[in-house]
Amino acid sequence: MSAGWTVREAAEELDPRMDEDRVKSMIHAFAYEPIGQRAGGRGRPVPEYDQAAIMRAHAAITAVTAGLLLGVICPPSPLNS
Image 1 (tube, one colour):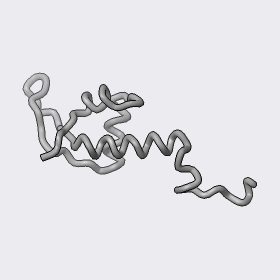
Image 2 (image 1 turned 180 degrees about the vertical axis):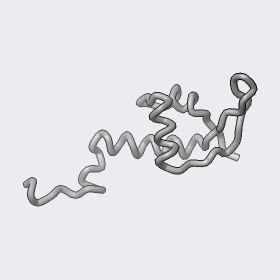
Image 3 (image 1 turned 60 degrees about the horizontal axis):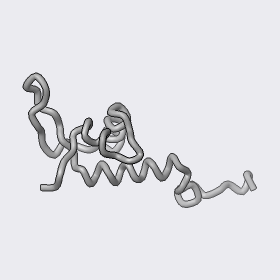
Image 4 (image 1 turned 30 degrees about the vertical axis):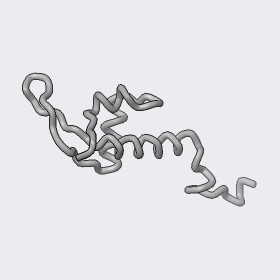
């Protein structure tokens, strides 16, 4: 089994950082399912997600928002030339 992160751990470890709401949105957008659970506050279990999958999704989102994939996934329009 691969290593896992909770939403809070992912928010703390990702670089560039994401807040917990963005991490949750990313997990939802990529339809990731928990790989396990950990004991959380007040005795409630906290879902744990695949660390490598979260890091790949974060890298993809970071590349797109930085415009690094603009010519790859969205070729320049001839109208803008």
